Length: 318
Ligand code: SF4
Image (cartoon, rainbow, N blue to C red; front, side, top):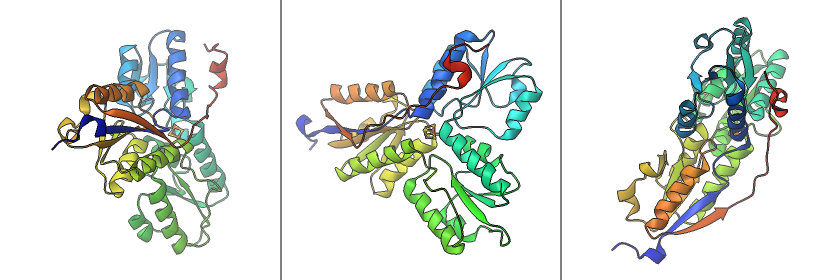
């Protein structure tokens, strides 16, 4: 028998959705759009969300994979995930105007790599193969960095005997999985050093904590608004699955697993750091129309904000 409507509750996680780095990256593109003559180019997806990118494409932004697609003298925005020094050099060689939307928390990881590789240490980067952020970070010290993707790999990866080691991580990893990987590496090399505070960013940590709070309330399924190339969104689903709760990554209300939801009475909803709130609210409206109660479960309030790049903060670029 299906549950009565007053027993059906959608629990909405907080914090969820946009983080300060994504808000800043989107604000940079918004501010640049009317200021640039000709098309504004963005290298890679400005943030990993299909709806955000499609909206900018409709408004004339041209997304490119590499800088050779940007005409000489053009303007290009680097995405929130950061770029390697080789890409910055390439932009300079081509005479491009660059506005950098790299999240300051990603830049912080780059600086650690520069500092410790510069002191002769070998860097272990914990992260996912091919992710834009990982590609950019590895480019800071391509000859002195090894990517470690899992606890299993941490058991066997070659650790240079003759070098001090320092680890950094991608900012959007699973907090629990990363702890396991670091433990394996430290068991193998007790002298391994790393950052005093985790490189996993506040937004990733908080969104995972908020999902754990939903799980503690007994949700039967988790809906994560996000795109399939969004690392932090994927990790939110993993947190639920690790606890034995099914999770769906959904692009919006059109994507809901409606048949499965019909049999449930307590469902969780969250959104990755690059997913706009209007997509969450579309889903909330769908549940309300189906007679579900909607309740927030907020574990903390976020008040993080990042300044725009100096050339934009006065709105006076170009
Ligand atoms: S998820 Fe974290 S590191 Fe990535 S843009 Fe947001 S605040 Fe920055």
